[in-house]
Image (cartoon, rainbow, N blue to C red):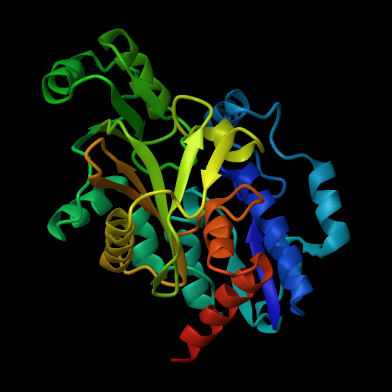
Length: 343
């Protein structure tokens, strides 16, 4: 098939998306597809707050020309004006966060009529909005941590919100953008002194801030491919929590696949993962993240409709444990998109 890989973009997760796109494009080439890659954020300036968040998280600077030049040696890297969608059989969406994952790109692709990978418009929008998705989880009796949402204040003054938060949650608690990813802008707040700065940090990246109950325990995730749950992955970060650095720098996190948990918890996590995936109307593939408390009770945090596909990413690790190579995984996702479009 002729495949267009969309990557990069202008969200805070641009850097990771370029890594995912390069890995996906290379795997598609190896499985015999004709691949063209498009950086949808080429020549666009990353918003200052986004660039600051990513830079301070781990990497000294956003992706540079050198990385794109290296990619261009592997596949044909095009500009937006040089892409003819009439010559494309499938669009592989390798964007993360922002308009690449929240349904905007998906809506544009719907208008073109070209099949694309991953979930459709509504599921993408619901999954990206953590508040909306958690309301659906509650309705479907999928356990999820308690939460509240606060509108971002342009002046950065959240003093009037603090009493309500303090009266609702015990420390530690989680503050994060309600529509973000890769833990960018997330803070584990341990005292009232840390609360206002955490709200300001998250508010730089979003219009709506989520304050969430912190669930101490194990970090577990369930990848879904098609309509099947893959082996559970346990994440053991070297930092206090699975932050941006632990996600994307090799050696910072230990991954146990399949997770060393009993059969009952494994079955429960896979069941809840599939239920969350179906409740939001996801398609193709996704990743459902959980925390399991000290009593072994899982709590669903979120569904990622376009999870990372880098060398350290979780979906490829789960697929490998199920006997699915990275090349086969990418090929399966691509062919699934084409087959769904024909129905």
